[in-house]
Structures are given as structure tokens and as C-alpha cells.
Amino acid sequence: MDVLAEALRISGARGALGALLRAGGTWGLWLESAPEAALHVVSRGRMWLHVPGESPLKVQAGDAVLVSPGAAHGIAGGSSTTMSPCDRKATAQALTDGSPLRLGSTPTQTEVLVLRYGQDPEVSTPVLTSLVRPMHITSRENTQLRNTIDLLTAELALPQIGTTAAVNSIVDLLLIQFIRVWLARHPEEQSGSWLGAMRDPIVRDALACVHARPERPWTTHTLAAATAVSRTTLSRHFRSALGQTPGAYVTQWRMDLASVRLRDTDEPVESISGAVGYASPHAFSRAFRRYRGMPPGEYRSRNRK
Image (tube, rainbow, N blue to C red; front, side, top):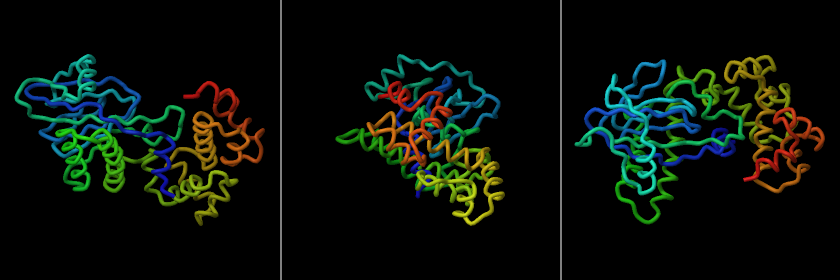
């Protein structure tokens, strides 16, 4: 079981091109809080990332930095540049016709690809939303990531048949590659996040069991046995990595799975309840009401797409 792939699939983490920025001279752009994570990829020149409470971060050509959902931040040509609010009209026009969003003055010195990654608001497993600080990867850390950035830049520079499909696929691939590099190289930044928990082999193995077979009657005891550790050890690692008990995570994942299936399919509640590990529809309905504040049928009718 590829836990990350499954969690990204269920959480609906999908990427899209936000805008291509071309900037020169003195420039700065302030981006208000948004529900999506923002990935800024510098394809030329350099920029500075400004996050409240943090020192300005230099991001150079070939670097990428991921900012968590809901985090207001700024990007600028300098470490102390005054930033202006985003021009929504100009941004909308750039998104409509594919033209770059121009900042500052000519000539262009910096090019930045702004990518957006949304997560299904009905899914509570915090794949991206648990990030506390921006994730920064430099061009020196991974040539594969750099090659993907170059591929994306080339597709945008010369649009042709299939470019939209290609760009969407590359954007999703870029997120996976970015997370891989970050997990391998930056353990000091990962404490307390869902992504950081992937570095703990005990937690990762337990999550793989739950994600692969959510219908099994998992308890702390059965998960500990499946991962060949004691219940005390498993509980300690879960609290350290995720801030919750194994049982709480099992319930959270089951409710996420059930919520998506209730909203997106016509499966009977009886079928969904068994698929997510409940012996009877009544037990499932009782647990779902506690977690979502309403019975499954009402949730389905309210949240249909």
C-alpha cells in the first residue's frame, strides 16, 4: 500500500497552474490567505518569500517552495521590498488567456510559476493542511525535480495539442517529487505533520495496514500485532508523530472514506458501512453522526456535487 498516494487520492489533492509571473526591477506581491497550498517554482532569477513571523527566504532559479493552505504570504524581488495586493483583474485576465502576469518593470529578471494544490474540504486527513512552515527545496538537492520544472516550463513556453493535459499531469507529478525530496532531506522540519509521520517506520507500517484494509476491525492491539510492536510502543509513536491515538486515526480515515463515497456515489449506506469497518449500518450511522454532526443520509443530500 502506497500510503501517500492513497491519502492524496482520497483527500483530493490536485494541482493546477495558478499563474506565470514575469518580474523585473523593484516588485512585490502580497497573497492573502487561500484554501489551497501554493507552490512557487522559480524558473529564472530569484525571489524572496515573506511569511509573517519568519525571516525572508531567498528562493533561487531551480528552487521551489510550498506554502501551506490558508497561509498568507508575499513574494518579492528583495528581502525588504514593500508588497502590493494581488491585482485580481490582471490575474483573472492572465488565467483566461494564458498570458504572463507582469510585475515591476522591464526587462524581466525573474520568472515564477505559481501552482495551486487544493484539498477536498470534506476530508480531514491533513496531508497538506498540517504543514507548519514553508517547505523549501533547492535546485542542488534533486536533479529529477529540476528536470520536471524544466519540462513544465517548456510546455508553457510553447503550447500545442495536449498542453493542458500535459501541464496538469506534470503539476501533480511535481508535488509527489517535491514531497519525496523534502521527506528525505529535511527531517528537522517534519515534526508533528502527517507527511513527517511517513518517516516513522512504525507509524508508516500501521497506516499502510489501515489504508489497505479499512474494513478490518482494527484496534490498538491488532495494529500493534500487525506491525510487530507492543501496544504501548505503537501508541507512543502515534502520539509523537500525529498527536492522536491509533484508534482516533482509524476512525478519522474511515469517516473520510465514508464521506467521499456518500457524496460521490449511489452506494447504499449498508454497503459503505461494511466497507469502512462497521458491523452494522446502525453502528456506522451512530459513529458518523458523532463525527460529522448529522446522519449519513442527511450528509449525502447536503453534499452532493
